Image (tube, rainbow, N blue to C red; front, side):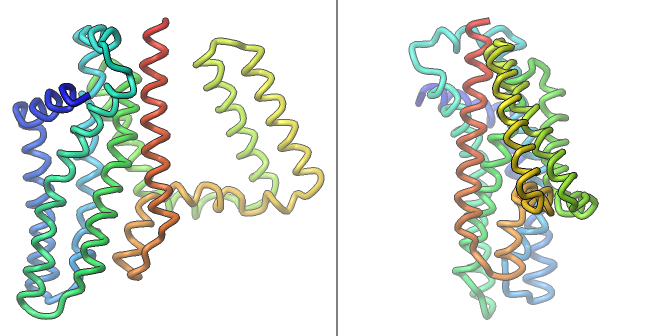
Length: 288
């Protein structure tokens, strides 16, 4: 795993992708820092970081798009599939290289609150927590991008699909406000989710009986709950999908100085889920 990590990290900076990402994120944040903290005298660096979230939407797909799609296109993925290390270690080696690239500007950001303190009042605890959560959010986005890269051999498709997902997540609160709140709409949402799970099971196992059985059981359970107590499905769309507004965990710190530990756990869970899905996507190609 260490050899893969070193190779990937070296390639990011030799190809200038890592340098461009780091430089652009620091420059963009620096502009906000000068405008809000230095010129306007706002004491929270966390507020400045919130303006840099938009950089992740473009920058993270740029980092992740080549992680597995390039290997697949150049047919060098066969070397990874036959390597003497497990697929999990291969995936983690590549992922940790992306995380390191994301960590570089965040380490530099740690200097900014000290600059604010040297000029007057500063809230170091809030600022450093926000930097940590900002970094974790970048890691979540990187895990999503890595999974999308594992699904295709085209770097452009990997970039566009990751960009689209991150953009939707960025606008998620506005999208939720347009959704209905009735019990029937909640039931439809659950049924669609059951169908998607069944399709995924069939895609991974190619066992139509297993996928159909899982879908039928899930649909029957959802209908039974609706008949017994339909009120459970009211506002289900907003309550269920509201947790997908991943940036809210970070913005709660910047806007309200509230640290949501359950949100941190959600970030770590999403990272683990997408790392697992990436391994499974590659594992499927090994046996296909």
